[in-house]
Length: 350
Image 1: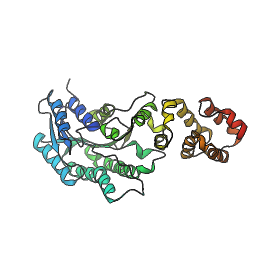
Image 2: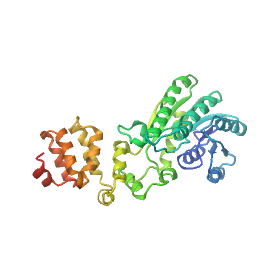
Image 3: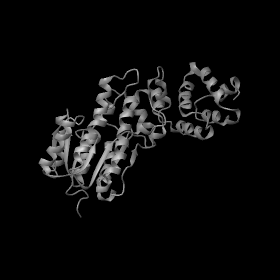
Image 4: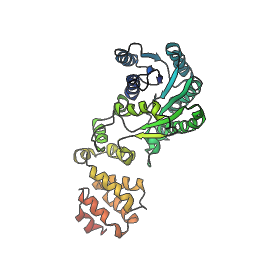
């Protein structure tokens, strides 16, 4: 039985490390010949190429190119056609994590993110489209942050640039569909990569892991199989879709995570509450019990609630938004050890 991608050729941008490396190795394992793209990490790219070629000689080559530039995209295509003579699969994976609020963003931050997430992928796709074989595949790697009901203030550039990529993908699906070329987007949640761990404290990583039911971080190898499927002939009727792979983390607000991690004097939270998924289940139930209570408000209120010195402020919020018929919410929170029922009964009569 032949491999599902036998005879196909793939370019994966930003594929020397992390998600990109996992994708390119999976595509190669399924029979494709691949271009491993890198910009700064040559040794890592060589390691990926050597690992692939150790099982299938000549199945991979490394190409140094800046995927954020039009010239870099053209170089990738030229090297691909020179080495393999065709192109069937284009995976736009190269990306950067940008944290910048409106007060912090400047031209350089904006240009770096939009060049890599939007301009580079768009013009590489434009140049690649005439070269793609009929029935080709284009897959964009976006982010779960574009679909969050609440986003962090410092996600301004990240969310907007990845959001633009989402719209490019669904529009191209219509234009290129006549040639049986499918265009889809994958939106991963937090994935355990070098990029995510750079500068992140250990307790942050552990907290993100513990809010998943499986008590672990997502891995690059959790993303690669979906890419391989979308690149296969079996996915011919899937196009214009944005598929989220996040281990149900989308039910937890990034703002909540940020506040828990960043708030001063909250180190004890990670000792006492890390892994307490019942707490988040209670929060989720609040949505159905109090439709009028805004998602952002109750998540922010939880953090204040956990801070003893700000309980009085919380009570003002709660009393102004919750009618007495919803006192069961207080009882639920109390059952999970968040607050003491005695405190509420004696002081606020909710």
